[in-house]
Length: 141
Length: 284
Image 1 (cartoon, rainbow over the protein chains, first blue to last red):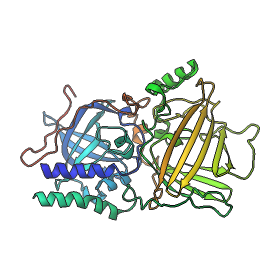
Image 2 (image 1 turned 90 degrees about the horizontal axis):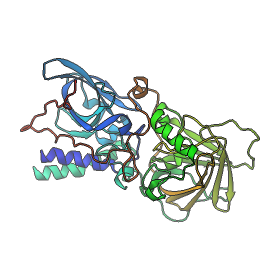
Image 3 (image 1 turned 45 degrees about the vertical axis):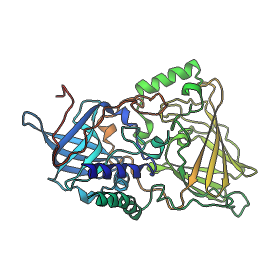
């Protein structure tokens, strides 16, 4: 627990040193009062700009499977945060912690991604003003 | 175990350094000494420039006003309200940030000075090329996001005078503050030493603001960085699928975009506490 948290904090603090790449404000799209944890099997990865997306099949409490989208930073931001495209394999079970889209769709902002090997990676777009945004701009207010 | 954790924490930045550009530690050493000069004798502003983190609140044209409250005219107040309630962030639509927003935003940029051209390269493929060849403003220039930009040298200061701006699908800053087609900007760029680039910006817009707005900030030379490909329209489903709302969302009391007190995420999962899906209450 302490180790994983320490690694996540170290990765987030690394982001404090990188340029902001935000394409839009976090709060224009996501609700900071609706945190979400998704645990599911990876069905698709879009390693794209202006955002990367991970899609997960997630079982709800009634056993129904719903496919969720997880919006993350673009490839440049993710690679700087310590995640590479090869870290994500279709069928892997991953954990994504983030915030629900305001429009109520099955979309969250991926602030923290826990990979199958246990690593926690910061998934937000640096400079978007979202929770845990530790970009240079946000960290020196 | 503790030693391993410490080693890993120390290793992460080192790994990132090995991965390429970006980051203060990855920016390369900040050059020292006097500003370099071009063959024409003027200071050479060429470098990648990263934010120094001190222009706070970031992204806010009104950073130096009490309560960050800009001196809106009634028309400006109405335009601001309209932007908040009816416009999607133009940059998320892959439109140029334009002026003054690109001077106020929190990203770095590449500046290339070559002869009578000063070229600014921003993220997502946005650029501007400012001529310093003695030309004057045209009589009826086409409105653009950066306006018609005319560069001149005032001693060691590069002065960029810009008029003829778009009046829609553009924000003056990250917080959706507006500007009209009456916008006139004057940028005074100096390189006081090799490692720093300073801007004194004056924003005049009598339709929307009661007085000229003065804004200043500094960037730091990041010699090891360069702009990278970021195709804005590659997969812009925030817009194409209609996920993105109007305006910048909540503005914090400190004048930046975002929630003052967001709800925390659950703690990272562990073997002792394996992760389970958690959805908001009453979510269907």
